[in-house]
Image 1: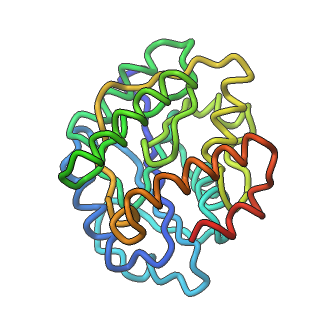
Image 2: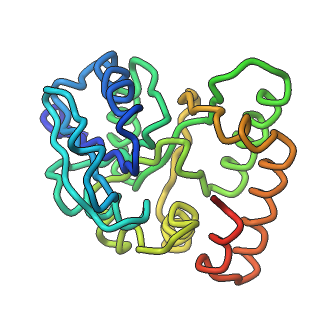
Amino acid sequence: MKPSDRISVIIPAYEEADRIKETLDGLGQVAGIEEAEIIVVDGHPEKSTIRSLPEGPFRGISGPRGRGAQMHAGATACCGTAMLFLHADTRLRADALNRIKEVLRDPAVAGGAFDLGIDAPGAAYRLIERGASFRSRLTRVPYGDQALFFRRSAYFRLGGFRPIPLMEDVDLMRRLKRAGEKIRIVRQPVRTSARRWQQEGILFCTLRNYALIILYYLGVSPDRLCRYYR
Protein backbone atom coordinates (compact mmCIF):
# COMPACT_ATOMS: atom_id res chain seq x y z
CA MET A 1 0.00 0.00 0.00
CA LYS A 2 1.07 3.57 -0.58
CA PRO A 3 1.55 5.74 2.53
CA SER A 4 -1.46 7.82 1.51
CA ASP A 5 -3.79 4.82 1.31
CA ARG A 6 -6.41 4.64 4.03
CA ILE A 7 -7.68 1.71 6.06
CA SER A 8 -11.33 1.56 7.04
CA VAL A 9 -12.03 -0.28 10.30
CA ILE A 10 -15.56 -1.72 10.25
CA ILE A 11 -17.09 -2.94 13.52
CA PRO A 12 -20.39 -4.88 13.39
CA ALA A 13 -22.36 -4.53 16.61
CA TYR A 14 -25.61 -5.80 18.07
CA GLU A 15 -26.60 -4.73 21.56
CA GLU A 16 -23.01 -3.77 22.36
CA ALA A 17 -23.82 -0.53 24.22
CA ASP A 18 -21.92 -1.73 27.29
CA ARG A 19 -18.87 -2.79 25.29
CA ILE A 20 -18.45 -0.37 22.41
CA LYS A 21 -16.60 2.32 24.39
CA GLU A 22 -14.03 -0.28 25.46
CA THR A 23 -13.69 -1.37 21.84
CA LEU A 24 -13.10 2.19 20.63
CA ASP A 25 -10.73 2.95 23.50
CA GLY A 26 -8.71 -0.09 22.49
CA LEU A 27 -8.52 1.16 18.91
CA GLY A 28 -7.24 4.46 20.23
CA GLN A 29 -4.04 2.67 21.31
CA VAL A 30 -3.29 1.43 17.78
CA ALA A 31 -0.55 3.28 15.90
CA GLY A 32 -1.87 5.18 12.88
CA ILE A 33 -5.51 4.95 13.91
CA GLU A 34 -5.88 8.72 13.54
CA GLU A 35 -5.43 8.24 9.79
CA ALA A 36 -7.99 5.43 9.60
CA GLU A 37 -11.74 5.57 9.10
CA ILE A 38 -13.77 3.87 11.84
CA ILE A 39 -17.37 2.79 11.20
CA VAL A 40 -19.65 1.05 13.71
CA VAL A 41 -22.52 -0.79 12.02
CA ASP A 42 -25.47 -1.35 14.35
CA GLY A 43 -27.80 -4.20 13.44
CA HIS A 44 -30.33 -3.54 16.22
CA PRO A 45 -33.60 -1.93 15.03
CA GLU A 46 -33.50 0.49 17.97
CA LYS A 47 -29.89 1.46 17.22
CA SER A 48 -28.88 0.93 20.84
CA THR A 49 -25.15 0.75 20.11
CA ILE A 50 -25.12 3.85 17.91
CA ARG A 51 -26.96 5.83 20.55
CA SER A 52 -24.30 4.94 23.12
CA LEU A 53 -21.29 5.95 20.98
CA PRO A 54 -19.02 8.43 22.76
CA GLU A 55 -17.66 11.53 21.07
CA GLY A 56 -14.80 10.74 18.76
CA PRO A 57 -13.44 10.42 15.21
CA PHE A 58 -15.79 7.63 14.17
CA ARG A 59 -19.29 7.27 12.87
CA GLY A 60 -22.18 4.92 13.37
CA ILE A 61 -24.51 3.65 10.69
CA SER A 62 -27.52 1.36 10.83
CA GLY A 63 -27.53 -1.92 8.96
CA PRO A 64 -29.66 -5.03 8.60
CA ARG A 65 -29.34 -7.57 11.38
CA GLY A 66 -26.73 -10.22 10.79
CA ARG A 67 -22.95 -9.89 10.97
CA GLY A 68 -22.39 -10.55 7.28
CA ALA A 69 -25.00 -8.02 6.19
CA GLN A 70 -23.73 -5.46 8.69
CA MET A 71 -20.12 -5.80 7.60
CA HIS A 72 -21.07 -5.48 3.95
CA ALA A 73 -23.10 -2.37 4.75
CA GLY A 74 -20.00 -0.92 6.38
CA ALA A 75 -17.85 -1.86 3.38
CA THR A 76 -20.30 -0.15 1.04
CA ALA A 77 -20.29 3.01 3.17
CA CYS A 78 -16.53 3.28 3.72
CA CYS A 79 -13.92 5.01 1.60
CA GLY A 80 -10.72 3.14 2.50
CA THR A 81 -8.56 1.36 -0.06
CA ALA A 82 -8.32 -1.48 2.48
CA MET A 83 -10.87 -2.72 4.99
CA LEU A 84 -10.39 -4.34 8.37
CA PHE A 85 -13.42 -6.10 9.88
CA LEU A 86 -13.14 -6.10 13.65
CA HIS A 87 -15.51 -7.86 16.02
CA ALA A 88 -16.54 -5.71 18.97
CA ASP A 89 -14.94 -8.12 21.45
CA THR A 90 -11.58 -8.30 19.67
CA ARG A 91 -8.55 -6.11 20.36
CA LEU A 92 -5.67 -5.27 18.04
CA ARG A 93 -1.99 -5.02 18.88
CA ALA A 94 -0.48 -1.54 18.73
CA ASP A 95 1.16 -2.04 15.32
CA ALA A 96 -1.69 -3.97 13.66
CA LEU A 97 -2.50 -1.33 11.04
CA ASN A 98 1.16 -1.02 10.09
CA ARG A 99 1.32 -4.79 9.66
CA ILE A 100 -1.70 -4.69 7.34
CA LYS A 101 -0.05 -1.97 5.26
CA GLU A 102 3.13 -4.04 5.03
CA VAL A 103 1.22 -7.11 3.89
CA LEU A 104 -0.78 -5.22 1.27
CA ARG A 105 2.31 -3.64 -0.24
CA ASP A 106 2.52 -6.91 -2.12
CA PRO A 107 0.03 -6.36 -4.98
CA ALA A 108 -0.57 -10.11 -5.22
CA VAL A 109 -2.10 -10.24 -1.72
CA ALA A 110 -5.89 -9.80 -1.66
CA GLY A 111 -6.38 -10.02 2.09
CA GLY A 112 -5.65 -11.92 5.23
CA ALA A 113 -6.01 -12.11 8.99
CA PHE A 114 -4.06 -12.29 12.23
CA ASP A 115 -3.33 -15.24 14.45
CA LEU A 116 -5.97 -15.89 17.10
CA GLY A 117 -5.36 -14.93 20.70
CA ILE A 118 -7.86 -15.54 23.50
CA ASP A 119 -7.94 -13.02 26.32
CA ALA A 120 -7.87 -15.47 29.23
CA PRO A 121 -5.25 -17.56 31.05
CA GLY A 122 -5.21 -21.34 30.85
CA ALA A 123 -3.62 -24.19 28.91
CA ALA A 124 -6.89 -25.03 27.14
CA TYR A 125 -7.03 -21.58 25.56
CA ARG A 126 -3.41 -21.86 24.41
CA LEU A 127 -4.26 -25.16 22.71
CA ILE A 128 -7.22 -23.54 20.94
CA GLU A 129 -4.97 -20.71 19.76
CA ARG A 130 -2.37 -23.11 18.40
CA GLY A 131 -5.04 -25.16 16.68
CA ALA A 132 -6.48 -22.03 15.05
CA SER A 133 -3.02 -20.94 13.87
CA PHE A 134 -2.32 -24.35 12.35
CA ARG A 135 -5.76 -24.55 10.72
CA SER A 136 -5.52 -21.06 9.23
CA ARG A 137 -2.18 -21.74 7.59
CA LEU A 138 -3.21 -25.18 6.38
CA THR A 139 -6.57 -24.20 4.89
CA ARG A 140 -5.95 -20.48 4.16
CA VAL A 141 -9.45 -19.90 5.55
CA PRO A 142 -9.16 -17.77 8.72
CA TYR A 143 -12.24 -16.92 10.77
CA GLY A 144 -13.82 -13.58 11.62
CA ASP A 145 -12.46 -13.43 15.17
CA GLN A 146 -8.98 -13.22 13.62
CA ALA A 147 -9.70 -9.69 12.31
CA LEU A 148 -10.07 -10.27 8.56
CA PHE A 149 -8.73 -7.59 6.23
CA PHE A 150 -9.02 -7.10 2.48
CA ARG A 151 -7.85 -4.95 -0.33
CA ARG A 152 -10.98 -3.02 -1.33
CA SER A 153 -10.79 -4.02 -4.99
CA ALA A 154 -10.53 -7.73 -4.13
CA TYR A 155 -13.38 -7.57 -1.62
CA PHE A 156 -15.86 -6.14 -4.09
CA ARG A 157 -14.57 -8.23 -6.99
CA LEU A 158 -15.54 -11.34 -5.00
CA GLY A 159 -18.90 -9.91 -3.93
CA GLY A 160 -18.04 -9.26 -0.28
CA PHE A 161 -19.79 -10.74 2.73
CA ARG A 162 -23.12 -12.33 1.92
CA PRO A 163 -26.22 -11.76 4.10
CA ILE A 164 -26.22 -15.24 5.60
CA PRO A 165 -26.86 -15.82 9.32
CA LEU A 166 -23.68 -17.81 9.97
CA MET A 167 -20.38 -18.73 8.27
CA GLU A 168 -20.17 -15.41 6.43
CA ASP A 169 -16.43 -15.33 7.14
CA VAL A 170 -15.76 -18.86 5.89
CA ASP A 171 -17.93 -18.27 2.82
CA LEU A 172 -15.97 -15.21 1.73
CA MET A 173 -12.53 -16.64 2.48
CA ARG A 174 -13.38 -19.81 0.53
CA ARG A 175 -14.42 -17.69 -2.46
CA LEU A 176 -11.18 -15.74 -2.18
CA LYS A 177 -9.19 -18.97 -2.09
CA ARG A 178 -11.09 -20.55 -5.01
CA ALA A 179 -10.44 -17.45 -7.09
CA GLY A 180 -6.73 -18.02 -6.63
CA GLU A 181 -6.26 -14.88 -4.56
CA LYS A 182 -3.29 -14.74 -2.21
CA ILE A 183 -4.18 -14.78 1.50
CA ARG A 184 -1.66 -13.87 4.20
CA ILE A 185 -1.86 -14.85 7.87
CA VAL A 186 0.03 -12.34 10.03
CA ARG A 187 2.13 -13.94 12.77
CA GLN A 188 0.80 -11.60 15.40
CA PRO A 189 -2.26 -12.43 17.50
CA VAL A 190 -5.29 -10.30 18.08
CA ARG A 191 -6.94 -10.72 21.49
CA THR A 192 -10.53 -11.90 21.41
CA SER A 193 -12.82 -12.23 24.41
CA ALA A 194 -13.16 -15.63 26.07
CA ARG A 195 -16.75 -14.91 27.13
CA ARG A 196 -18.41 -17.47 24.83
CA TRP A 197 -16.08 -20.26 25.95
CA GLN A 198 -16.59 -19.23 29.57
CA GLN A 199 -20.37 -19.06 29.28
CA GLU A 200 -20.83 -22.30 27.36
CA GLY A 201 -17.85 -24.30 28.59
CA ILE A 202 -14.57 -24.70 26.74
CA LEU A 203 -15.13 -28.30 25.60
CA PHE A 204 -18.74 -27.83 24.50
CA CYS A 205 -18.02 -24.56 22.69
CA THR A 206 -14.99 -25.92 20.87
CA LEU A 207 -16.64 -29.19 19.79
CA ARG A 208 -19.82 -27.37 18.75
CA ASN A 209 -17.81 -24.96 16.59
CA TYR A 210 -15.93 -27.80 14.90
CA ALA A 211 -19.20 -29.67 14.31
CA LEU A 212 -20.80 -26.61 12.71
CA ILE A 213 -17.90 -26.00 10.36
CA ILE A 214 -17.83 -29.67 9.31
CA LEU A 215 -21.56 -29.63 8.62
CA TYR A 216 -21.17 -26.42 6.62
CA TYR A 217 -18.46 -27.99 4.48
CA LEU A 218 -20.77 -30.96 3.97
CA GLY A 219 -23.41 -28.65 2.54
CA VAL A 220 -25.75 -27.89 5.46
CA SER A 221 -27.15 -24.39 5.01
CA PRO A 222 -26.23 -21.53 7.37
CA ASP A 223 -29.96 -21.04 8.05
CA ARG A 224 -30.12 -24.50 9.60
CA LEU A 225 -26.78 -24.24 11.36
CA CYS A 226 -27.61 -20.96 13.10
CA ARG A 227 -30.27 -22.78 15.18
CA TYR A 228 -27.40 -24.41 17.08
CA TYR A 229 -25.35 -21.24 17.52
CA ARG A 230 -26.72 -18.62 19.87
